[in-house]
Image (cartoon, rainbow, N blue to C red; front, side, top):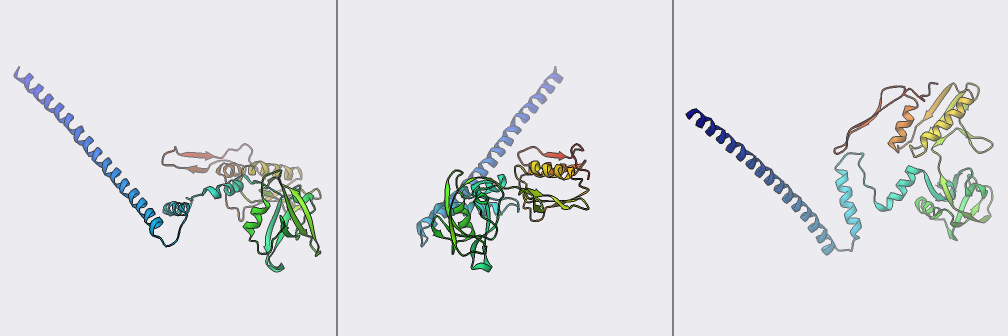
Length: 299
């Protein structure tokens, strides 16, 4: 009986200890969480106080959005080089780069330093409204909506030429070798910018991907990894195969990147096996993409 009571007392003591320890642990965790909450509150208060002091006492009026976005950029800059903040006003331009589609007339332009800084056409995209209107490389865009383009910056010019598909834009064009400005009204369309380019144009204005017709060497320049890049590249390779291609030059110079899904799919075209890329996230599961032999270009 005595032994029984001893064991019972020990069991009871253990139960009490196990009952007490979690309470202390819970109390410590609760205290730690409270400290984190207090610290977070103090940081947010510091930010709000700073914001208020600037808005109240700075010598000039300043846009609230500018202050907040500057703070956001400051936070993101403390991360790595691949972390960026895209503001609402830049989001549309970012999506256009990814999608390679926009409402416009279909010309690539630049400010020609050798021609009085005039807005000059680098190339019209084949099949676009500008191309159909007779605009060619070397032409000068003299006016847009009746306003002279002299003094325009490149972003200003591009923004003015772009717009919703179906809307018209009035421009005047000075063709290369001429001095007469010809007025044109061009209706914007949804322009798809090809990311897979060849060496030269064929007579039908499609890309010629065969660089050396004798040696059967193909050439493809990939400008971005956008929504349709893999599909376009596959079509170009198939075209070259039909012509008896023996070797291929894939030009990735000045390619700034783009969609991971497209970069992975394109890589898989040239890799038979092994890991292509992997991703890791703090709150998302790790992922890995493996190359497959199926569909691989074997040259």
